[in-house]
Amino acid sequence: MDLALAGKTVWITGASGGIGRALAEAFADEGANLCLHANTALEPTREWLEEKPWKERVQLHAVDVRDAAGVERAALELAERFGRIDVCVANAGIWPQGNVGLHALDTERVRETIEVNLLGALWTARAFLKVLADKGPRADGHGAALLFTGSTAGRFGEKYHVDYAASKAALVGVLLSLKNEIVELDPHARVNLVEPGWTVTRMARPVMDVPGAIERVTRTMALRQLARAKDIARTMLWLASPVASSHITGQTVTCAGGMEGRLLWDEGQVDREEILRRLERD
Image: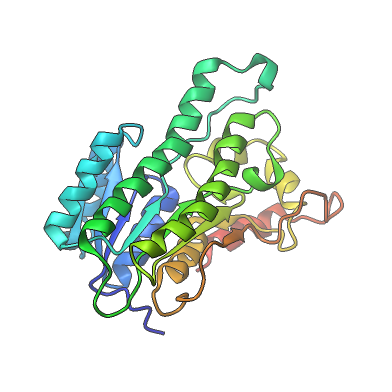
């Protein structure tokens, strides 16, 4: 199916990480122009891009998503190069290491998590909407798309990571507000949110390497599998498409293998080796 993303301009924040890079690959394969955001990992991202046949369709920039003015400058630069921004994926985020109860949680960690995950997403969305307000809707009726990367922590909570859970849960309120605002700028524009569950990325790898961790988390999933970054990216790709998902907005799509807030499998019913084999398959 042609997703009608060829020639569209896609802005992805947090493009230096696992899900972000998978998003870049997925949209590039559809023929989109890309603006990829990185912050502290700008040079590794630049090196990664050098090997890509589609690198000429990419604009790379470094900005801290907590810097609202810097985020707006990046959006304006992208719009100047490609004419407009059709899709924005507010994907940048952090998951602080260390299990800490709220009573012992450092104030600075809470502030940083909220500022990156929540305010960073807000500044990104605001910059995108400002460009949309300036450029107006596309003449072909293909509506703009704004996507947020949430987390199942925002749905089920996450013990010892209340700062992260709060930052992701708040995105639901952002989603439900902006889906009613964006149509005033573009009557066909849509806003959706994807909630990944346990996904094998560089950020999650230290936790996954703890003995017994994979077996423990997959016992809450019907599919008994960890997600790959490409699983999340493909879901985002579908939601970004102005033809495949033209009537879907204000929705939270959970991409977590049927995760529930309870155990679905008894101890011994999860096969770690099969999970790891699946991660290597396409």
